[in-house]
Length: 167
Image (cartoon, rainbow, N blue to C red):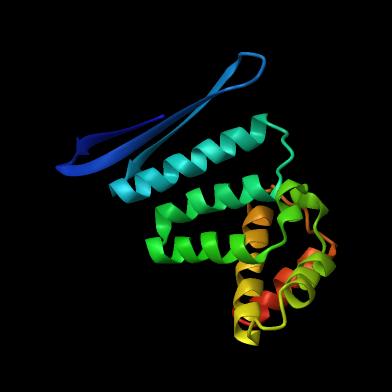
């Protein structure tokens, strides 16, 4: 995994090269050239790595692993305070048993139960709504990257309802 700069027509461009090794020892690599900025190159490197890993690795993601992966992804494009809100806000308020559950096993009912039944009644409705928005975004990211299944499931309805309320 490398980011190299080069000059073409008196302009500075970046090239990203990512290599992943499968469990059987074979390797796969991807290259992307002509990226205009270093920040975009870092983002492209992350996306290429995730693409290669998802092609060659059938892995079951737990909630805790996925949450950490989302935070790493968010650090590339969001401000530090926003990432901290996703980290601490979600970690403090979700049930501990979620950490070992398979990401594909979640339903809309699980999310609503965690937010509106397990969180103490002293929490404001605004805090509960914020948590719902954050969880929706995390599940949406899992679907976008192919880690979670939601086609035809309860989570699809959850994500769609959250998007309609400007989640």
